[in-house]
Image (cartoon, rainbow, N blue to C red; front, side, top):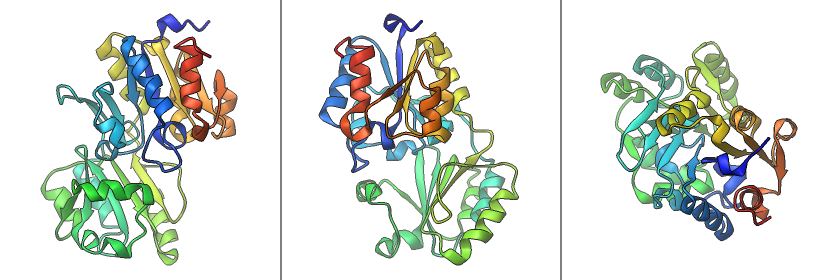
Length: 284
């Protein structure tokens, strides 16, 4: 039976869960709920498909979020010490091989590696020509992105860097099927939720549960001490199903709602905050 006193860690997804419709900011009610949890010694851990470098401003600038699980579980970071507690990526050679499938073809891509985002410099020089997701504009305006001159494949091979995750947006119609076929032919590639136009993929070795287990062991906790909230079957189900209290958003996948312990309100009606208030803060 669920015991709120045993909850010592809450995992939170971003898009469709804690962020508002702009996909950049959390509501004041959500931030207040998270701060109240932190005051009680509960770890508030972002657990997202996003690269660490593109976590929302409220997360990036607030140390109540000490631990981050980013890029679908490819990386676990202790922001206070800078220690990487867990990392699982494509090998540098696999990373280079995947880059050859689309580099130099004027496709907008964001490559997560080493906690940063890498771009083809030619694309960065003419961003206005590309389908940049609206909620990514704030990040590009920070200037933190890394531009790669020349071939992406050469860069990752020569620098011996393994990629955490690839995001491709606006893939032209005539290139969608060849790209999809090439990716599916590589057994080390796992797809995230997406479309043929917008493609996200990461290594089959990446495992969000293993990433979280590493963090829990570091903190002396288990999944019996976890509340997990999400909206996506592909991204959040493994966490929601294992947590002592698994919560799905009303706007979430019906399959996720079926396995969750509780279904809260929609993301744009403070559903996350309402669940925390009800089960953790005893205010519901």
